[in-house]
Length: 126
Ligand code: SF4
Image 1 (cartoon, rainbow, N blue to C red):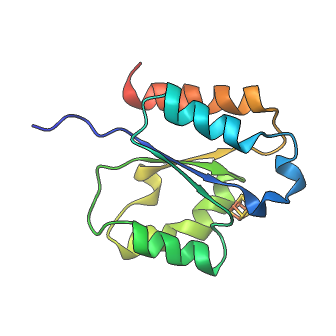
Image 2: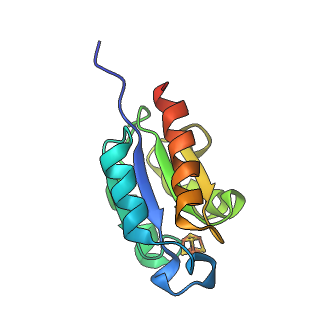
């Protein structure tokens, strides 16, 4: 009867040079999420959709760990699904049940913070 696991927040920052994130203060966002919201922890990755991102998922995801929810900030949720679902499936995980993809592009920092906050609060039942 363990306690419900807290979600993890993974922020893909699109190399740091994508114009879509020009208005977003990455560190302000991730420090807000890790300090103010009910998450287990936060990870920042520079580019999850290329080879080293794929390597990260395959190394990081644990076989059969179906209880963990990942809130992934980055680009369009459909793109995220297309790019990440196989890495989840390879570990016996279900992308559609375990990932909440958030498109945080073209947002000011407070707007992105609010979007992540709403999703995390909903997941943890606040
Ligand atoms: S997964 Fe999306 S946000 Fe991340 S680097 Fe690729 S295109 Fe950019």
